[in-house]
Image (tube, rainbow, N blue to C red; front, side):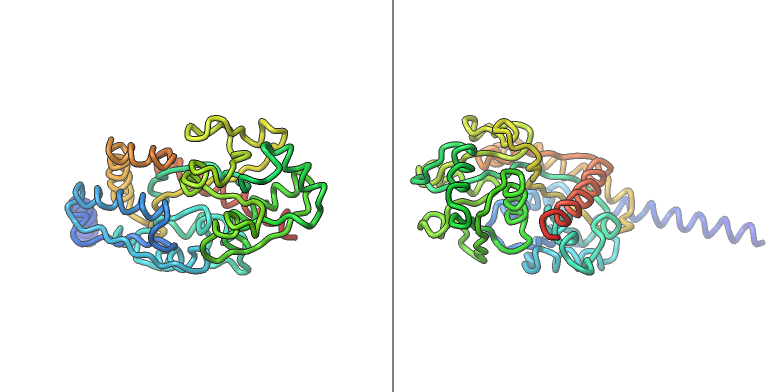
Length: 316
């Protein structure tokens, strides 16, 4: 009798899991994004979401919840039910950098989420005004060293990727330049001459570079950007170790069912392979980097550990 009851329970659970996998999704999916609408990640997310709606046959609703370097949205997803109906479009800021900065951390980025798929990855670009007396990183370093404490740089705020990347540059090159946090309109003080330089990720610098108002001196990463083929990497300019990437991807709460993860991974991968979306990303100098859940999880863990080390070195 006990054996029969156990068998019936096993069959019921197996049927339930199978039925869940077959019917997912049966209601709208909500994707939280921890930053304001209008930026490049938001634009990419909305294009992917539109294609997911068509392939999954259910609404995919993007909800912007900006604040605290994206951790408000990330924490909400970490607390959500692991059923595949609440996801996070996460970025380096809230899946690696902010948890390394906060004490205590709002969540553990490795254990609080289920990796689904990486979407895109790209470098940061070091920018100066067009009238700056520097056309290479060696010239910028010489300029800054000749005026210690007099040059400054912009970033979205203390602890942002832009800020920490510049602190890495300062340490690598032995520079004394002053941080100017800019909560909104980060390009305005650079274009207006109130600051001298800054880091930013693609594609935001492109129109300012095309207009000739700004100049790019170096890019992070191992290779030059196709959109900026004449701009050398930092490593090419004897400044290795400034290892900063902009990256985005989908995660869910910890414990997301494997079948759901695989379905979402496959459908998001198909969306990124859409020629129309690929062309739109190419115009923004963004290179898709879809991956397996395991590969994205390994990269997430690597980045979380690396940013802890960066924070320890740049913010003792």
